[in-house]
Image (spheres, rainbow, N blue to C red):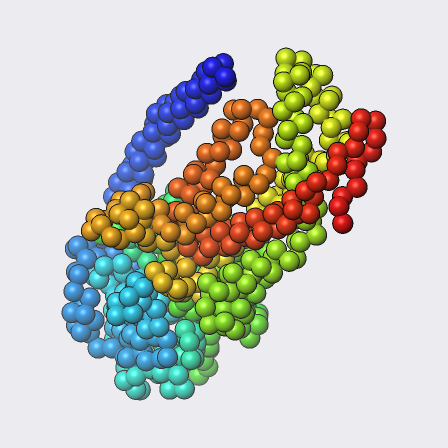
Length: 599
């Protein structure tokens, strides 16, 4: 046993040496190199984009066929962001936006949609907390806006810019009450934008330009969404946050850091869509699906801030004297509700629109799993109850496979005394001991590998459920019972302040709540029902697993921990019943086949 302990401590020491060596010899130097390169890129980009004489600095266009860049707002953002968002909104004329799920306004100077709040979603689980802010005006913190317009394909006609003051035919935009913005350039071109809103988060923007002059003009319609500053990211590798687009039925998801390195990523596509995603929110531009577009992801510096932009350029519209041209853009700005995205994808033939929700590689599992949980949640009125019922359904579905595996594990458990005898008799002769153990397995009809099947089956289900709980907004702020008010967040209680009895704010890494402890206890009890490893080192490692998983899963969504705890409890019941049915089953004598089980 002393030799085993020595080997164990040597293994631990080597593991620590590898981890620390990786961190200090490779990872830290890599981080420092990346920071130095990023600082160098920022400095060079800022020098290249300093506005001259107060004029807006255009976003540089790279590559043949790239769309002309709409006007930049770099000159408007040279000062630090003004925290008084309400004050900024009151400084210029606006059209109110009022919908069942949205409220905000359209800035008439430039015609920007730059003020949106999601009134049905709160910033925290507290129902009195402020609504989620999605879009913000220039000069406010987290500037984020959408814009449509025209750029010249040739010549230099006077076109509307972000300084153009539009007139509106009404003061409020609401479902069924569209707003039309108008502007005349005084040189023979009249521009109209008819903006309508449905009962959720979908805007339709119909642009029209009429040529009453004497010369033809050629224009491209464009749409963009521009975001200033790198947003705070959840930072999980299983979740994409940032630019996203579908071009030719192919999904592209560049990271913010990739965009800072490449600056411009351009795509030619027929239809498709482009946008930016957060964990739960989406701003997406949807062009006319039957026409070619040039789409781009771009990064630049504006007033020392990162500026991320997605845009697309429509085909050339030649407008002869006395004629007009039109182009329709759709803008989604709201919550990534699964059924809503599916509905829009079908209604407007938008390819892969539901991929804005990062269901991941296991899409074929995660989306059906969500649909099942969502249905159960609506039937029961509680997503926590839905998770428990879903767990029971999964256990029933895999019952035959799990039953066979648990029988094999129960037989292995019954063989423990015989295995100990073999260890005492042939402990020094490993080859002979292996032969005798194989004979023992054969006589008992046991398979030591079959016990792994329930775990192997559970892993993809566990991971898919983790994705569903983590990425779908339907699970956000969904309550269970008692202290669990958000199934997508971790259990807020902690063992280290006696679950709230001691008035102490526990550090997050010590927040080991009730449900993780229940999960750990059920995992420990289940482990005690399983056959124990013959190797003492393996036995010690297995003994620590319930404690390791308790600490590790304490930071996971409470819904996932509830699933695991309930699944463990059902497995314990199933294994106990199987072991009870096998109790007293005789072991076949040497040279005979496996004994028959008791009926």
